[in-house]
Length: 96
Image: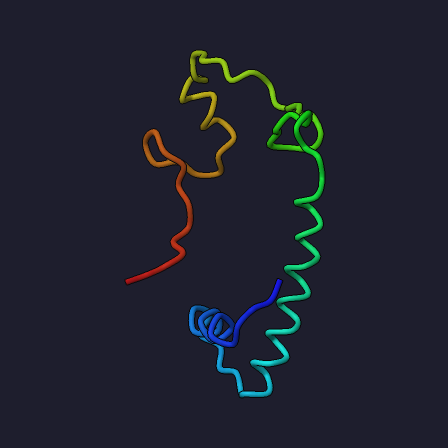
């Protein structure tokens, strides 16, 4: 697939890349080569291929997300080194 000089300059402008005249020609040839490699994919017969989001089935190793009663506050705070009312007390990290 041939690319014009203007198309390469447009892409360079989008990506904020400065290209010299020589670099424009090199990029034109390289980008054309890359696009030609992808063109081969259009020759594949994919009529009987089911579209998928992943190539392999996904399974989760996580438990079911089930709502349940929270632990009592006293139990949660029982191992805390320092508390402030119903909250964990932590050292100051940032000061004014």
